[in-house]
Length: 395
Image 1 (spheres, rainbow, N blue to C red):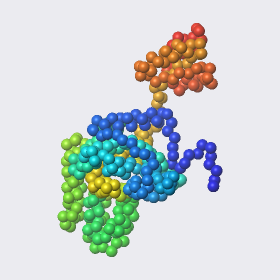
Image 2: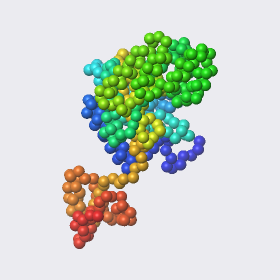
Image 3: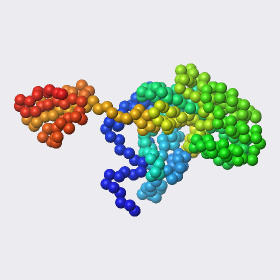
Image 4: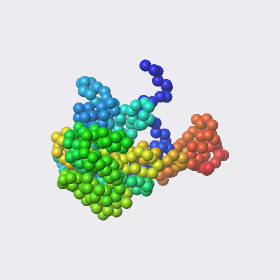
């Protein structure tokens, strides 16, 4: 085994330095406040969960989970997502008290990455789950909250793509006849491999009309008229109900005044198998990856003994921060420098500044090496140096 370098971190793990941390905290706080304003309550779940419950329910690939054995020999995992743990808590405790429930969270999740992948193995999700409500009103509330939260965090240029996994599955099953054939084709959509999708469709033993119906799925992107195109691909009433759900969702989002931020993309898929209906992804300027995603998962809670519908979304804080561009500004941080004989004056000065909401460090000058370099880290420096030094002055 190759010896690790002194400063090497596990693959995919990252340090967050002060300036970046401050920006992350600011975005997290703004989004959290918006969640709470809409009636969502925060909770925490443990970082370690049992594989037999959360690991299997999460739908994250086995090789992406961090596993370990506890003292009793049970396999535990670092939570790979937050939806499954919250489903566990809701089914075991919350739904016994009331229904529906509105839950919010902000927590790190862990997914092992290949060394050459360059992706984060630990990243923070901030999101909400609305459990126990099967209506389209619940889905529109979630998307409207997502839009409002991004605006409060300072984002203006973003777009939410909305799809319906149930419609695509129903249409493909009607054409292909067997679920394994449907899953093989859905894999190409999930990977955004449209060239592979076209080649696979052309290789199938199907009538030309059925091949055309499958290929026309790739054109189902845009505004409301997409629903008419989608309806034209159906040969019976199967799938119509799903399109009606999308139509109703668009109408309700217009009532929220949020329709300008949404579009339809019926090719949208997700590798989390618990999604069962409406699903969506959000993109913002400055980054090529989705910064968040969500959707309806009406069957997940059955794994925990509760047959309750649910919908939710999660935002990736690291991607939101990346979309904001490089961190260049200084922290609004002051420092009071003192020599030992004037420490009491400096302490009183610092207490007053902190009571007024200022952020200020207190530093004995005899412990500083390279004073000019040190003071450049602060927006204001106050001096309490020597009997005849500057009396609380600053620069």
